[in-house]
Image 1: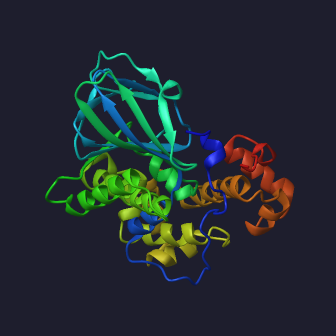
Image 2: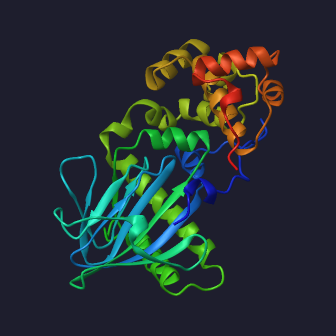
Amino acid sequence: MTDPAQSKSHDKGPTQRPADAWVSSDPLGQALDFLRMDGVFYCRSEFTEPWGLDLPPMPDCLMFHVVTEGRCVMLTSDPEPLDLQQGVFTLVPHGEGHVVASSADAQATNLFETERYHVTDRYERLVHGGGGTPCQMICGAVHMDHPVAERLISLLPQTVRFDTSDPDRGDTAQGILNVMASEVEKPRPGSEAVIARLADTLVIQAIRTWIEDEPAAQTGWLAAIKDPQIGQALQSLHQDPERPWTVEDLAEQAAMSRSAFSARFSELVGESPMRYVRSWKMQVAAALLKSEGATVAELAFRLGYESEAAFSRAFKRVMKVSPGSIKCDP
């Protein structure tokens, strides 16, 4: 596995659409559409008991594991080990360091001290263990840098689990998992692109399942995204952050009066519409500074500020750092 910071692709900044772009009737679907991932690495792991693998933290990455044969446990900062069964897709949304092992008391070896075979620059095969009962997994880490995606991910818990064998939800996911396992086991021309797309799909499936089932997902920003009227206003803003939005403009998108919109927006989101607009513009600016190396002058003009100084003050007020401190990723 190479340094994740060196493996990211940075040719895609935040999605920008013209103000007159078609607005979907599914704002949550549009938010999920922003979950466009750049694969950092993927690995087919072949373990035999006893075994343990210590994975380092990967900031700004979502890490995932799915057992294709056998079972194992995952140890995080939570005191209780998490059982990983065959067919269960487990997502570690915040890139937290953790251990996967044959049992909670198995000795764990650092990832970088294990025997790994590089299939391609981003694909590896890992073989490790004491020769006992086998366990096979597909693991990976993906990165996404769109502000909508970052906001959505920030709301997720320490781990998210999705059972691909669930007959009510998992038929398609199980098929995807089978294809992914085949592509990793026997790479062919285009396997890298296929696995990346399949991983995207499983990550989205896991997050979508959490949103549907988790009570915490029925409040706050996610509730606002799913609201038939507030969601339309948020979607329009997310699509066109460069527009000089006013409360009246957003209320129009929601087909509500200004006062009713402001009250409903504040109730769901937890902040006023214009405060959210200012915050959103700065998050977009930060993403553009990272992904495109945009200049402060360019962003000040694009986002409707009178001067670089005014933009810089607004940026620091929201992001707590100056725009000049944000470096473009190599």
